[in-house]
Image: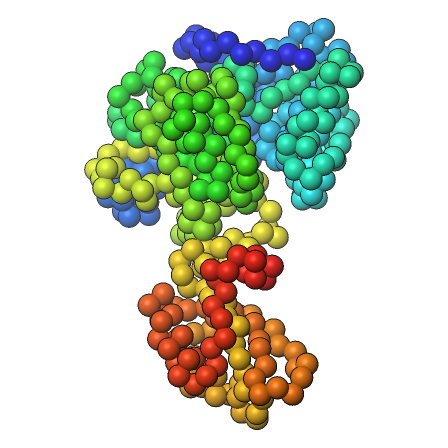
Length: 420
């Protein structure tokens, strides 16, 4: 097993990484976004890593790391564990460098991601599905390395990985015509944040680097607050590209020194950002790819009039998740509500509910009802989408006045999670 845990990131080492990557990683655009610049009254630029060949920045670190390995380190093959972008970067690198690799992925990984890994890796990559979570896959991958003398390619906690990701910062600084006041970037394990912040510390130390994590997986924020790497007991895995229980020791050591702030964003806010980017700019991003932009809202006053860069980290979004993304966005905005409605067992009750109780802009989006008995009232689970969040209280008042109200279940996790 090979893992470099030195923390010595130099400008020279990052420039060398950029040389190695020049035929592999695209020098992605730094584009001013008019919509976001208007919303925040700032100059907001997007660093479009979603336009890489593997549709994420992970190609940089993976290729740089694998190309640095010795013949002895690669003769038995390499192994990585990933449910997404790191796997694709490693697969691409294996094919390009003609090195055999095993990509260990959790069993529930979507078919689309598995097929992409196989496509990028070709004959040089084998995909092994094992375990229910990334942690299960990672444990299996490390055991394989130990048992078969293979080399493990860590997704973030390795100096060569970090140097590869750091080349993004070189490109941002080279392409920007003005001094950069803020850089917002997503944080999962911390490899991207470590690399980018290290280069800015050397070349533009006045630039404030802000790391953005999912609210349901605040592993770096918690580590910095407690001044040590911690393992979160549970995480929300929805933002899969940035949802880790534990950051790296190396990345933690760098980030705690270099980052201006760590912030978290609710998963629902990220979902709304994904929808806005698609509807307003025709940009397709994965949940982790929208994190940096979603993070802007917490700094709206601070970044006014400033030059701001958001790193759009990837676009490997499965189209089958679109309905869940929309649902989460509506729930976050308080526009989607679920109730148990007690319908009187008489003709015309449903019509009364629709005509007399629903507001003119309310829409039923979910309805589950089965007549099982002849009691006076029968329950139905009803989902209602509102145009305005202020319409909720009047709606509930009308339900109660006409004896339809049973229970509001958005805030009852056991019922709600089962339903949604």
